[in-house]
Amino acid sequence: MKIALVGYGKMGKIIDEIATKRGHEIVARLKETPTAENLNQPDVVIEFSLPEVAFNNIKTCLENKIPVICGTTGWLEHKEAIEKIAIENETAFLYGSNFSLGVNLFFALNEKLAGLMKNADEYSCQLEEIHHIHKLDAPSGTAISLAEGIIRNNPKFSAWKLENTKGNELGIFAIREDEVPGTHSVFYRSEVDEIEIKHTAFNRNGFALGAVVAAEWIKDKKGNFTMKDVLGL
Image (cartoon, rainbow, N blue to C red; front, top):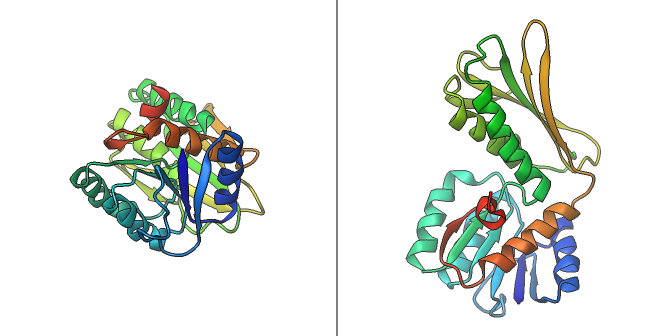
């Protein structure tokens, strides 16, 4: 495949290395705004940029009928508009708050546990995420996905909130520390015990590999997708 990388920071460089090893050709490595010309006619775009430019980056690619795999978080108030643009241009869009295989299995485990806990009124629930000090958005997209998974499966919660909460709000605590790639925990606490599920990333390679696998999967497809579609979860 011909792949254009929009956003060429740490993640972009790891994606470049993994995609090349898998036999793909990187036809663009963009730190600047994508255009029809500088994208160089790729089969798919992998977008890992910054929250403030993600919407326009994705919009440009979709309007040029190029499928987009997006791993940028912090812009999701515009996600519905992007999904509409993908449909209007008869192309494909896939957003992943986290492309790691382990994290997507963790998402499924989180939803299962949330369903089991819905009648356990003696337990409170909260989430914690730890990332490197360079991460600009808080909470992380992965933490938001975990919270949404709990809300879908446990009627006790109707919304999430950063840090302290009350009533039916689900609390997410965001910690920025050193060079941590990403650690996510879900806690259920009662007066007598605690249940915890946790995912710890050791490096960014798992995220990058998942993004390339998603790019391979989406070729020639039309519509809006998630990693659940890619992995058959």
